[in-house]
Picture: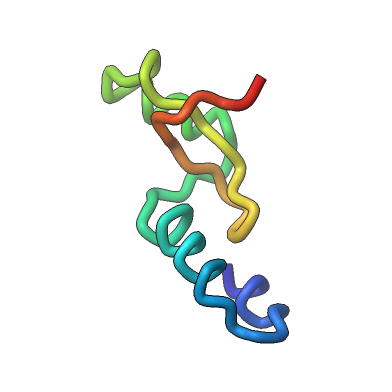
Length: 68
Protein backbone atom coordinates (compact mmCIF):
# COMPACT_ATOMS: atom_id res chain seq x y z
CA UNK A 1 0.00 0.00 0.00
CA UNK A 2 2.79 2.43 0.86
CA UNK A 3 4.37 1.86 -2.55
CA UNK A 4 1.10 2.72 -4.27
CA UNK A 5 0.70 5.96 -2.33
CA UNK A 6 4.31 6.99 -2.96
CA UNK A 7 4.19 6.21 -6.69
CA UNK A 8 0.99 7.92 -7.70
CA UNK A 9 1.45 11.27 -9.35
CA UNK A 10 -1.84 13.05 -8.69
CA UNK A 11 -4.61 12.26 -6.21
CA UNK A 12 -7.66 10.71 -7.83
CA UNK A 13 -10.77 10.59 -5.64
CA UNK A 14 -12.20 7.64 -7.61
CA UNK A 15 -9.07 5.58 -7.08
CA UNK A 16 -8.87 6.60 -3.43
CA UNK A 17 -12.46 5.44 -2.89
CA UNK A 18 -11.65 2.14 -4.61
CA UNK A 19 -8.59 1.64 -2.40
CA UNK A 20 -10.68 2.30 0.71
CA UNK A 21 -13.41 -0.12 -0.37
CA UNK A 22 -11.11 -2.79 -1.82
CA UNK A 23 -8.14 -2.79 0.46
CA UNK A 24 -7.79 -0.77 3.63
CA UNK A 25 -11.03 -1.98 5.18
CA UNK A 26 -10.27 -5.68 4.60
CA UNK A 27 -8.07 -8.24 6.32
CA UNK A 28 -4.78 -8.91 4.53
CA UNK A 29 -3.45 -12.43 3.93
CA UNK A 30 0.06 -13.30 2.78
CA UNK A 31 -1.07 -15.88 0.24
CA UNK A 32 -4.12 -17.24 -1.50
CA UNK A 33 -3.87 -20.39 0.61
CA UNK A 34 -3.89 -18.35 3.83
CA UNK A 35 -6.98 -16.44 2.72
CA UNK A 36 -8.80 -19.61 1.72
CA UNK A 37 -7.83 -21.36 4.98
CA UNK A 38 -9.25 -18.45 6.96
CA UNK A 39 -12.53 -18.67 5.05
CA UNK A 40 -12.70 -22.43 5.65
CA UNK A 41 -11.99 -22.06 9.39
CA UNK A 42 -14.94 -19.69 9.65
CA UNK A 43 -17.27 -21.99 7.74
CA UNK A 44 -17.37 -19.63 4.76
CA UNK A 45 -15.21 -21.62 2.32
CA UNK A 46 -18.08 -22.08 -0.11
CA UNK A 47 -19.21 -18.43 0.08
CA UNK A 48 -15.99 -16.38 0.06
CA UNK A 49 -13.44 -16.10 -2.74
CA UNK A 50 -9.86 -14.88 -2.51
CA UNK A 51 -8.22 -12.34 -4.78
CA UNK A 52 -4.86 -10.62 -4.97
CA UNK A 53 -5.20 -6.89 -4.34
CA UNK A 54 -3.83 -4.64 -7.05
CA UNK A 55 -3.06 -1.93 -4.50
CA UNK A 56 -1.30 -3.69 -1.61
CA UNK A 57 -0.28 -7.03 -3.17
CA UNK A 58 -1.82 -9.03 -0.32
CA UNK A 59 -4.82 -11.34 -0.62
CA UNK A 60 -8.35 -10.44 0.51
CA UNK A 61 -11.68 -12.26 0.68
CA UNK A 62 -14.84 -11.25 -1.14
CA UNK A 63 -18.30 -12.65 -1.81
CA UNK A 64 -17.99 -11.74 -5.50
CA UNK A 65 -17.11 -14.81 -7.62
CA UNK A 66 -14.04 -14.48 -9.83
CA UNK A 67 -14.58 -13.63 -13.51
CA UNK A 68 -14.75 -16.63 -15.81
